[in-house]
Length: 312
Image (cartoon, rainbow, N blue to C red; front, side):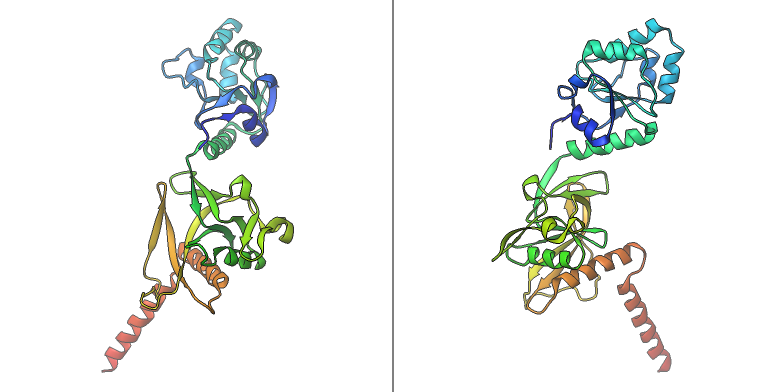
């Protein structure tokens, strides 16, 4: 987890325009992902002013400020320029008023702009800051995009996770991370997985070594990150262990505060793990859309029992 993000990184990631204070972009840091729209502050109410947040000015704020005198605007803006205020951002290609530029320059705070509507801009900034400031955790496994679903393949070392991922890539799916997956919680329902910088687009195959998936298979074979929808745990076949044959067992694995659906697949010679994982992903999607083959089987079985009972 990063403690802070530079305003320069925010500008580059969200394509903001720099109206003033370009020389301060590296020095100013953002420590929280929340965004502030200073409506009450423009009226002079500063009791709960969140000065550590990026301050976003939309059409409402700019219009209100235009009805104030120049002296009032300058006084308010100077009060808004705290030591830890990262930046002022103006949406909708609106122009910052002169007093904002003056006060920001005095406090060495950048003034930025965007063509986006205020709501979309706030959402974009929050999403980026959430991803950068969220707590991170490393998990052992391989993350692959299968039919648009993020599938995290886990299992003991040597069980065949990377080889299965390679087969999936050859079948048209996309690799996100091999061996180590960095995960963070984006919101109450979503876990995002991505590769560490040193392992990006790389895959380790025992007997061959490290291969660059993007160079060998093209840019369509990789993704930078994805949400984790399903965990597939590969386990060496144990003849003494019973495995779910009907799909009635619903298992999950908790990552941070999110319970991610999980299936365990036994591995032995002759089983094509790539095809089985493809089917697991398609079956998961079908269940998400309301179709459950297990319930169909149970209904068919109930009808058969009922039919036999009627014949007696």
